[in-house]
Length: 154
Image (cartoon, rainbow, N blue to C red; front, side, top):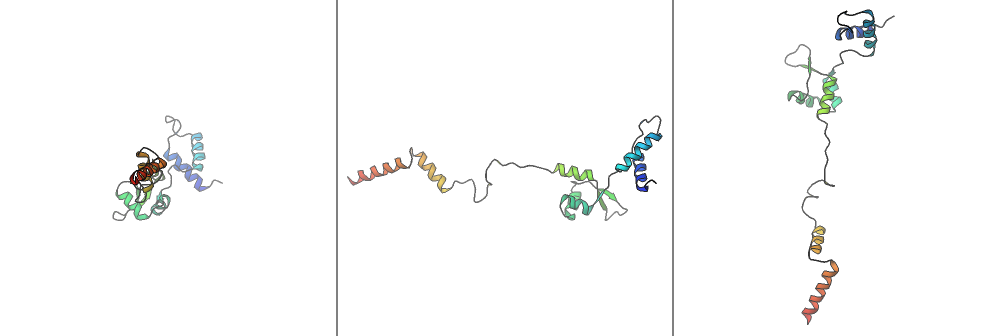
């Protein structure tokens, strides 16, 4: 006995696709292929409801409404209402939305530019700069200061 769901899936597939040879129309082997393919999957994928789309995107329902309002996310109007529309979403549209909004950021800096790690130099960086700019290291500066102190005493 044939499962009615599988038979309905095969008929839906047969209605949504073209026969193998358009000149001859649907033949028995074409219908068998359609039946086999229909058992695997429906020709039209299932639409996601608003809560399901929100769950897939990991956002709230109001965020989905905002995305629809601003044209970021296309929807299928299911139902008869005109004021409060019943929004459903294609799985392909959700996947395309994710692809469009996927980004990878790369920073050249090893640390973020914050108030703590700003562009101003720290005290130890300034000290190192001063020491290296004066033409010598710490010992050279020390010897110069000692010589200046001896000269002052004399």
